[in-house]
Length: 111
Length: 119
Image 1: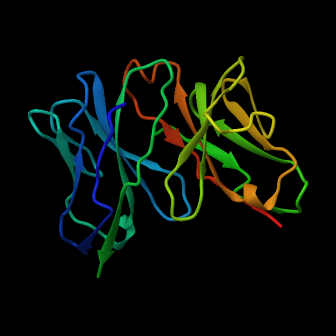
Image 2 (image 1 turned 180 degrees about the vertical axis):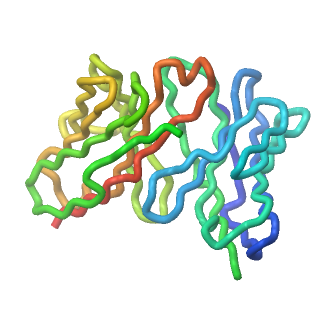
């Protein structure tokens, strides 16, 4: 799977949009971009994933650049409960299915 | 959505004890389960891949005799930390994927983790 790079930490005001960037410049054509988050002392929670097109679900939006070398996870109205470590993972179909976690971005939502 | 249940959520035991952690997929058949370990302020580190009905595949540096993995059914994998010592204290997390998850690019689902403390 391609390496991803994320800023180590970000702050966001409660109620505002949180935009979390991720670079994956070596991503290959069959690799999807997955986002998970981990709230303190819990297991990771799946948020969203996409290949080329922008995606939206009830939790977030995922914007992928046309060259697919970077993406942005958008939490439209951040709440205090969104404070977590956010992981961006580039992962393709394979027999192993292993997910390799980087250091992620610690998002602190402030009142 | 798919649910993965991990039990127990917390274990405190004496050095030398063996501890078993269970990971269950509650509403889907998990052909593959993964075990991770996470130390404080660090990211998740993959320990091993557990395939139903076959031997687990361990990542480099993980002692297979120390961390015994059994995946006897499509809904249950267990991790046994044998003769645990204080340095084995960590947060252990499992994840599971269904039979067609990768072909359909569906996400993996994670348990809520087990905090193991060895005194």
